[in-house]
Image (cartoon, rainbow, N blue to C red; front, top):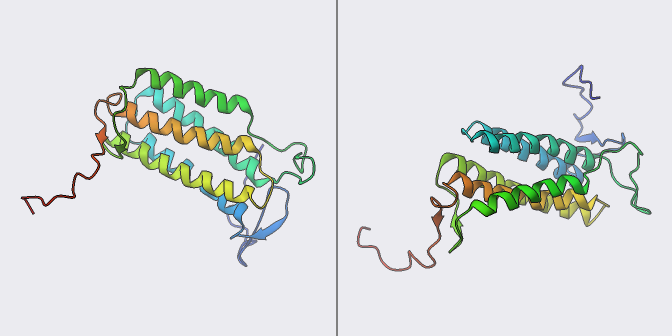
Length: 198
């Protein structure tokens, strides 16, 4: 249980903060950047929910928001270097079942999507545009977690979860564009010739 009785503590005024283990690190530490990015992604998904998603999609996004707090909790407690065990036995870790649920949602949505004939431009409906923004933020967060994994052990399921999540956000964006029929397609080289209207 998390209990917050005070919002400001002044403990970070010198540019340091605490990990889940209590260890103090600079706020510029790759681990802070990684789970700070997860928090940003969660906030973007909160914005997605305000765009008027149909209820099945909105339920998925709310489910994912809770999972992303799990991802943040996972990342804020480093794994031990030797055996890959968490530094605390009670550490919350992303598990394969959470990834599998995303994969099922991806497969279910993909069955209904029109085939892709080109790369698509982010856009279409407001809902699709918000989902594309969330997808790009998710990709950036995944890269931050991968960068962390280069210098400190990370639960690989957290990385896989973020990878699958960006895929899911892509197919949900297409679903929000009338199941792909309203996608804005990339036309390679379209603007290389002079336009009579310019």
